[in-house]
Structures are given as C-alpha cells and as structure tokens.
Length: 292
Image (cartoon, rainbow, N blue to C red):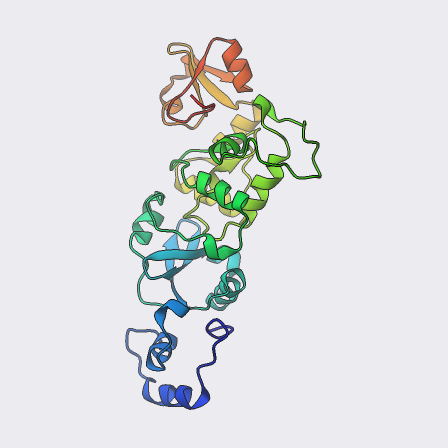
C-alpha cells in the first residue's frame, strides 16, 4: 500500500498485532484486513480490483459504489504502479479489494458505462477538463466523434481559449481552434480510462487522439467495438468527415448507427458540415453532427 492512508499513520504496535493475527489466506486481501483491524474508516481510502478488458487488464478504484479511478494495465504496468498513480492523482490510497462498484463489470464487458457512478471531483481536473470528459461519456459504443463535437457537447463555445492560440482562429464549422488543446489536455488526463471512452474521440480529420494510452491500445479498444483500423484509415484517407444519404438527404458522423445502414451506392461523403448544408443535407438528430 503506497503512501499510507491520506497521510495517516496506523501506529506500529497496531500493525504488529494485525500482522501477527491476520496472516491467513482468506478471501479478503491482506492490506484491507489490516486497515479494518486497526479501525481506519472505509471513507479514508479506496479499494481496487483488476477487471479483464479488451486491451488487457483494467485497474478500477472505488469508494463504496462510486468509481474514483481506472487505468489500463497496458498503461500503468503493475498493481503497485497503479496504487502510486492513484495516490498521486487523488490524494487517496488504494488497496486491493474484493469486489467492483456496481455495474463496473457489465460496463467493461459491453462498453456502455454512461450509467456508472463516477467521481471526477477528486482528480484535480479543471472545470473545462471535467466538462470535456463528461461529454465524452455520451459517445455511443462503436462510434467516433470529432473534437468539434466534443467542444459543442461540453458547452465550450463561449469559454476562453488558450492564450497560445489566436482567439479568432477557427476549425471547420466555426469551432475555435484553441479548443483543440483544451480537449487534448482533458483526454490525456483522463483519470477513468475506458469507462470514459476517450478512444472514441478523433481530431476533426478523423484521426484518433489516443492521448491517454497510445495508438496501439486505442486501436485495440476500437476494434473490440467493431471499429476496424482499416475503416478509420479509409475515412481519413478519403477525407470523409461526414456521410450523407442521397435518399434521405441526412448527413451523419460516418460511424453513426444510421450511417452504417446507408448502402454504398447511396453514400455521399462530405468534408465538412458546411459542405453538407450547401448540398441541401440536414444533420442527423441521433449523432448530432451539428446542434439539430
């Protein structure tokens, strides 16, 4: 257990008694037995378990029924490395536990984690980063969304842009360019990996960000959701940012469930929402390429 429990010592005599009396191999992890034996309240530390995930193990920390952290084993390495990272990020120790918070295993298995109870307050995020990650939580399983979509869903259109970017610089469809750095920073700091699916975010050309765990891990997570690397590369290569149907005159994000039903001969690719609008197409009300 790294760093104590929020800086609170347990006292050497109490620990010595615990070590002597609890050196059995029951189902409760040893460190957790010690904390309970010496009377450390459960709200002073988090517990964690390792859950199998598409890209390998996922360490998930929780405080009661609330998830407080999650890091892929491919990123963090060992359980001890996860404990140290969690302590540095939240100021709370994490000790091996016996069970996950309610809904975690189904969320990992299905990729649908929107209903999980997640606490971002203790991770030291800015308000902007929290808003970005909350928007990312709403990206559906098996689909991708660009940075400009995240910016709009997070309500950042009127927020201050970083000083390093000219305030009047714009991305496609009028989204200020300074927002890209804000979104990228939030994705890189994602304290609840996989359960907040930042592998479903791309730049506005369709290239995945994968800021939290790198392209190989991101590709594995997307492929587990039915998004093939070849499909992503093809969309980027052909500059297909949106996909329209010439029968409905509706345009979507190209991996939207509705876009996937457009037969090839009726598909109309667009490089921007502006191009789609000029062609007389209206935005899909499901994937919301623009506020519809």
